[in-house]
Image 1 (cartoon, rainbow, N blue to C red):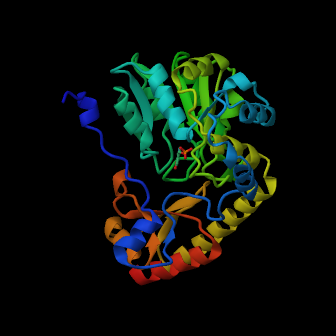
Image 2: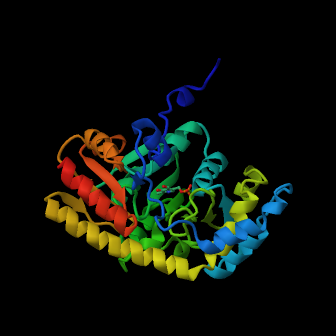
Length: 359
Ligand SMILES: Cc1ncc(COP(=O)(O)O)c(C=O)c1O
């Protein structure tokens, strides 16, 4: 078998452990998962209702243009429909960017640590990931601008950044943008943007149609509670979108995802409930973690890091035995940190009990 070296060298992505797997392996029931930054409330009820109503149409292919969701998004975000590419999760948009714009050996600059899929997808596409270390857990925009070479095709700015939950400021982002050559694509991954409370946060949408090529990535997986449907989108200049549409598969988003996302988009009540739950949950968790005497890092998202002051993979195992799934940050270069997302109030309480037991 002949495999490109860069494919053979790929490290598999390790996702958060599913609840069923833990319960099967450890013979326990009632486990909770705070490991994948999911929405603890569940899916938007409007999305569920819309999905139920189209189940009888599953014998049909979905609309290849995803016209209804595209036009609704365009109206809501005040962009043109030809500036939108909708994908099977925002993950697919990352993959499409790589497949559309990268040639073998091209460089892509990314923060480190950040969302692990950037590195994996760039390497899988034959590109060279250029990782720039965070500074005090914040993306080092100056460092990233300095890392640009003639081979640079793309720069990922994960704002807020997973796993640190930090943002870059609007001023810093705009200074950075000035330094970026006009042919380099700046990808602002805004998977958690709806959770942000800091008013200095830049919004990718504001930079479309400017002098530099900016792409904003959004998802229905977090605030809209639809991670299992797999649907997200990218906002960009129409010329960029046109190329990506040529590369993408026609039926890349399935029927249920299309109608579910469309209904969720207008479920303002659900969105409000989610944000209130996440923000009050964070305040509760910060207070309790501090009482336990551990250092934590405040976030602009629905997840945050806790310094366990010892091997996080051991803590992870100990918590699993207590039926609580957290994410050890070993693969992200923080061997002593765990990352948790906000759960329902009873999940948060249960996590704190487990935390007290393992400390
Ligand atoms: C920073 C970041 N970007 C993108 C994604 C992927 O989201 P999606 O479910 O839309 O593929 C995630 C998921 O955890 C994420 O943390």
